[in-house]
Amino acid sequence: MSEQQYLPTPTDVGRFYDQMGPFFAILWGENIHYGYWHGPDDPSSDAEAQERLTDLMIDYTRLQAGQQLLDVGCGTGWPAIRLAQVTGGKVLGITISQTQVQQANERARNAHMNDQVQFQHADAMQLPFEANSFDAAWAFESIVHMPDRGQVLCEIARVLRPGGRLVLTDIVETTPMADEQRNFFLTSFMLNSLTTLEHYPHLIRQAGLDLEKLRDLKTNTQPTIARLNEALLHKAVAIRDQYGPELLAMMIQSLPVFAILQREHLSYIILVARKPVTFSA
Image (tube, rainbow, N blue to C red; front, top):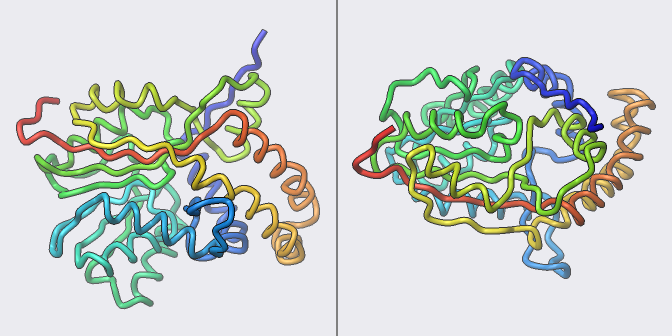
């Protein structure tokens, strides 16, 4: 008999990031996402690899100066600010975490970018925007938290202007995990579900979008968990002081397990889709 899986609500996910924000800041700094390395011998730092992945996302959006992008699951805002700086475009970021909204808006003000970049509290399952409002959208490792990928993709398609592009990254399952392994992975990070690379074209078609690119980045992102484990040990005192010894011990035990699951069962994809000029929902 399979174990019953707990599915977090958007409120649960928001509370998770409210509580764990300092943890990710200690380990990852300005970015809360995977890095992109050119290969196993790439000497890039974590921050350099993370910026490289952000830049790849920016390239795929093809956002022009004056156009507006919707950042679905914006975190604390740095990728959105970097996109606005590079392209001259505007960004509206949404997150289910009230703390992240405050931190992201403060970061935009400190970067003197608050005229181009704003952040607000919203649920991606029910976007509070009119149809055809944005020139582009991206979802940076956020869709895995959401209860229904199909509904989120339909919502994004609705608010994109005809011809607008969606760029997203996601963690996908490549070989089946045991129920115990899957539940451990999902509950540890307040994730809702995993899909497969092969299923994504179907999800994109169902949302009424045209798939333009689907890349497996496992080789390039593989070092991320190992680097996180190194950072955890290096910054153990700061984490213990912030959260106590029990959470530190749990993470020291868990990250090697995550590394095994990533190596044997998971991959990381980047996807580009486009809303047809003639769109039918």
